[in-house]
Length: 123
Image 1 (tube, rainbow, N blue to C red):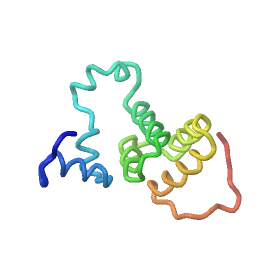
Image 2 (spheres, one colour):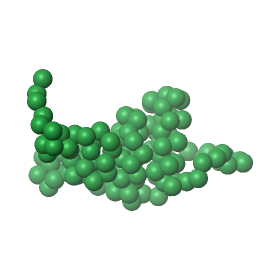
Image 3 (cartoon, one colour):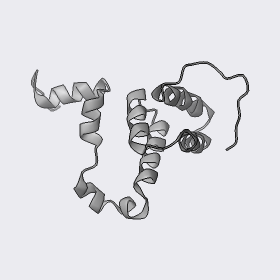
Image 4 (cartoon, one colour):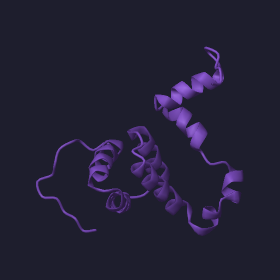
């Protein structure tokens, strides 16, 4: 096992990441220009689509609400596009994941909890 000193930068970063610290997550996950040039997806997908795919991956992986909020903010997409990502991810991951993801995504969008009277599904 690798030894980490108490108060070492690596230990501190690992603990901040484990706690879901948004600034640490952004620092680690922010794509650099070099990654963008080497990434085959960067040539095939526009920025908005790549960021929506990232949101879908985060939903499927049961990512914390702060990560979802960050992905939603970066994508800059409207509610319809974000809901479409949720539905596409949910249809692949299954109903349990869909319910869990929907709850976290609603929190990431700062929606109040509760079920609307008449749900409308047009997707």
